[in-house]
Length: 134
Image (cartoon, rainbow, N blue to C red):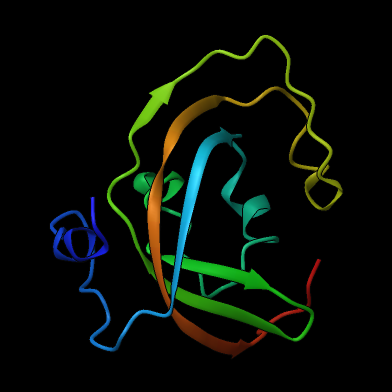
């Protein structure tokens, strides 16, 4: 599928693609999604206030990419087709993610795999942090 075809396929998006020209192209291939169920109050300690965390599709369908830095939360508007998702069962999972070690104590509640998507991104929107990085 061409970039033009991807840009013209937008029915699945919650908002319109930006009017300005896109700047980056990426392919996110062979992706695995590991999901842990956590209490919302615990999750909110780690998720910046700028992000929503109460939508089920938020697990895979995102149209903004966030880059967390010490002084800012950088946002990139992105577009891709819907992820082709497959449920998988992993026999063994080892996760070493110190920032979230208080949340990730068991095996994931949901595991999904995708062959990938082609991603188009627009320029960076830098936002000052509203709270300190954990």
